[in-house]
Image (cartoon, rainbow, N blue to C red; front, top):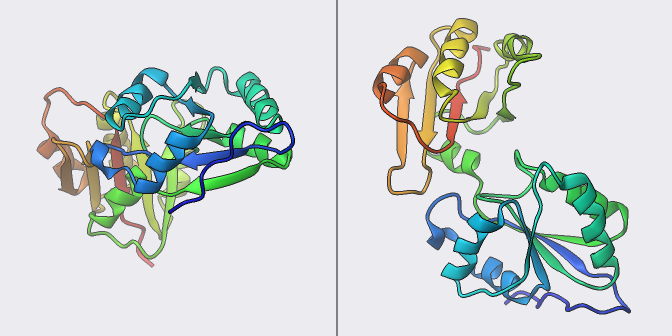
Length: 235
């Protein structure tokens, strides 16, 4: 049983819990994560509309404040002041572990700088789940998140083409085809795995060369975020 999150108390500093949430199936939530969400003073969520579905599923009724990329800097300072007044909060993202390709890092950094106790509540991360079922080497890998959209994109791909560790990217549905074609240009005929809708009803894994994966995916409508895993260059 995890320790109950401290309530608002002017005589003590509150805590920030970094709570991982399901990347797909809502039943992937841990018991401890549910306990923490039920006992903190408020929840800082990347998208309160998305997170309200999760909280309702577990019968959790807590005040929520939005914490997204457009408000991260100002909102972070505001939330840290609340911690210093004795309140505690859970930081959650739309899916997965906060801070992984989302603005959660800003709040964690500022809270640490002010001496706030930051407590991780482990759980799902899309790229780890995809890697575990990929069939590619997972003893040594690098996670690149989303590739640059324009400036520095080709330079980054060129640099990564000689990387010997397994390489992992995130990609959106409307850029996945372009990214796979660019990877083929820079990386050649290498094995790759593309995973979509991890832990959801339509979870899919496509394995092969970049061209083979593109053919498997076809030209239909694409939804959800993709995890792209590429084998490293030969030693």
